[in-house]
Length: 548
Ligand code: IVH
Image (cartoon, rainbow, N blue to C red):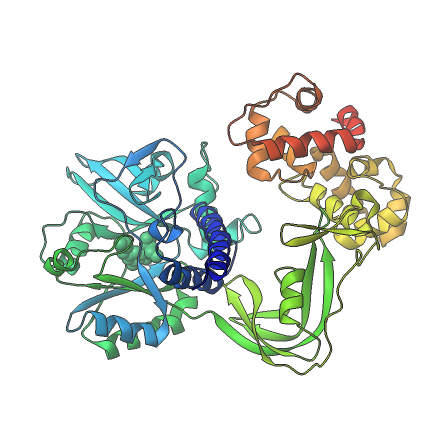
């Protein structure tokens, strides 16, 4: 390989490693930024490159989870991950790799791995997996959901998860049950409305002969365990996998595959583990569910900060019980590279059961080439490339950005004003009733008749809006900061900021003061810059200060 090729691969390696680190970190905190199989293909490409350029010291392939950034607690036995693959081919590979074994098969719960340490029957600590060597203490969130057990000292590992029932009861707050679990355990305060459960799947340092016996023991202590199935060979595993796949929608909890473990624990010692996963247990994940359909149109969405996202409008199809009529395309670069066009037949998959995306083109029926976007599709202003995305730079002058920011302002985690969907907001903007989000808080000053007339609203709807606005004026500071819609300041950052200021006025004055140095943990320089920019440019904050 010549030096040029080496350098090109090294550059690609750096890019992929950076992305993978970012995805790992986000995943550990409960956010899946990309579909599982896209993640796997990045990982596979990284492996491929390392075969050519050699193993890299700082490679994310050498790490198990994310790096721990809180007070770390050491794992007495490393908490590993599982090697995984998809479907029957992977089952065959495993059976070839470790043949002639009795396996125990279980559900692979889609939750967050945790270790419980019991001393004299009482839970002394619950620790996350972290980076496998160190995790952090989340005892306060687990205390009430696990039983006191019989005088025992023991370490049990398992999964913190959320049942579908509990997930649907806090609808719209989180994208997936796993995200909800992560949000709860990452919080420093009690989050009693987020209900989670624990399911055990490993007894650490077990003296039993078989895995089945150690699970039986855990069960006898009244800790929750999963049903286990004995599999003797490829056919049994394949059968179990198919059965579980068919029944997954009937289960109380989310799963993303099955796990198989050799039953004989002496083999666990013999086979040991490689750096990140054992050689005696494997995860077999469900293939993402897919369907073919036709692209009807490609439209451009402009986000609240101007990011342009192409969206494929599809001939509606049904996957896993829900109708899918559009799929987002990662960014414009991907649209240009793949050249998706109306009439093309594409394979759509639903990742993690939630977000539909285009997996591949099945049949390229269009002969056209995608037009390169040179201006904002909504306001026609200039666009600029930032990292791998293109952004409209018009800010408030772009109708799309304006509407998105208004929608954000009224959303549940912000000012929580009910009854103002996009269409109504659009209409109110057209009427000149609202120029900036703050004007929404004055909508109740309009006389009832005006509101009635606009939407054919009944008295009840008007009253509902007025009541919502009254509440919104008293929103806690973290919701207010979040509602301002400051770039790079999400809900978590808003919560952190709110803890450091007494009022919105205090927050604004501090950031606008020349002498202010922000030393709040987790609020980095890019965030500080965003806040300052917002406060200098978005003058409507003055009006908001007067209202709140
Ligand atoms: S056994 C060495 N059994 O899947 C790790 N893990 O992708 C042994 N998981 O970190 C884990 N259901 O958090 C095991 N029935 C099950 C599981 C399970 C879910 C999680 C676990 C693990 C992750 C690996």
